[in-house]
Image 1 (tube, rainbow, N blue to C red):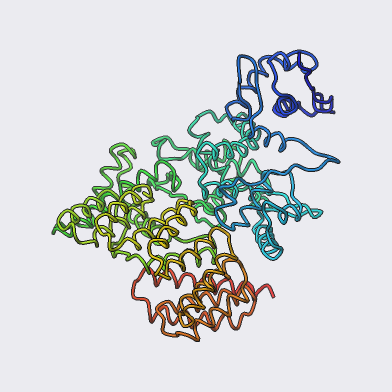
Image 2: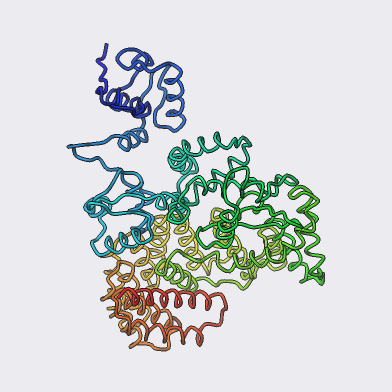
Length: 634
């Protein structure tokens, strides 16, 4: 019989009043043995009670940390090994670090997210952990990102060790959704945070006799996303924080006509009325937390609360946008809906199953402001996280326009309705490519990337003369889907088929940049410059590649060359803005301000499309705000 390795007494029987960590014990056994049978856990020296053993084996199996190979025989999985390392303390031994998965490392140089992942998934990190492979973050970028994360209170530095904060854990949770992780992985990562607060919330529920599962769910959902540490210096009692969130969770429209007033709640849950009033107002106005909370007033003195992007609001949004879209769409055919009638239609449908019928008057008062809120969301939904991300996004958006015409339809409209109309127009004139382009744009807007790729293949068959632009659009869609290599394959094939087209090499240099291949990208664009020394666009591309790799000094010289070569180029306003961003990074504020001013002037003069103009003005404003912040720090 194979000899079984057992953990030390320190692990099996922790000192003082510490509880046994059965998760750690079971994973230790499976990590240090080829596999284990049920009896290895239940008999001496382990002696885990059978009910406890059954529960923990079930939990670990569900989380995919272990697998049941055969009846009563278990082995650890790769994810289980990672979890074991998280639970283990390596004193006097070489630390075994957990690193971000490839899908995160290959998605771009999101250094702040790499760092956040590291400090979340390891007990602590040293600066050297970020510099060595596989991260290999350069010193300047590392300093900048560490400073940003510390100032944002996502991580803290003590004794030259970096650790995650409660705010960082919430930010980490949001970050997971930025990547192409499967839903199960995201749920497993989220469960780690849920486990951390389960004990506190369970005690809170038991003490205050909170039994309704819907209230518990709404409460837990808020606690996970709202960081108490942001308010603890003022609201020193964490249970008071919980009570405020409980009040909001109890008074939800789904529970109408039930209602618990501020006065009754403050008496029942022993919290001062003025504390409730103040903090509910703070949360409603979004002054502290990144949470949009809607309030539905029911005269004379009742208020119900529901969150944006939760079930009720999503359904109300769908009903509202559907009716607004239908109204706008039918206007093209001579049907006009009065504003009041439009609101009534939304109210009537909402009260058929979404809101209680007694809330009609409350909805009538609420809807005008809510519709203005929806309009604002549409305007800002493409806003990126920071100045340089926004700049990169708009640069790429404008570069795509070189090879692909963007339509003029305002895509505030609902997906299915406008798609049907576009397909009807295509059927009327199958040889006109404009409605085809509109359909592509609509599909992209609604993230229907697989359908876009299929439709672009159809277009290539119908319009072979536009093959290059359509194939490039396919490449860009693959990039959106995080398949940069797939986009590169398309470009390589196009270059072989059209070797006389230098712009394809220009695109290749961009894709090499996205793949992190700085040297190869620069070699290609420099060769293009040698062959076309007066082409300002190629110098602009070289500058952009250098900017991407944070070589701000060299990038600025290339942008200056663009201005020297062609002050009237169609993209010159972009060059000035990118040059300003270089000077800002170099902390040369006077030069940054000068070029930012010129870029803003040219945006107004050269851009006719309203959306593109607004995008670039947003970039200019973000850079201006960054510059003011830097100057204030000096």
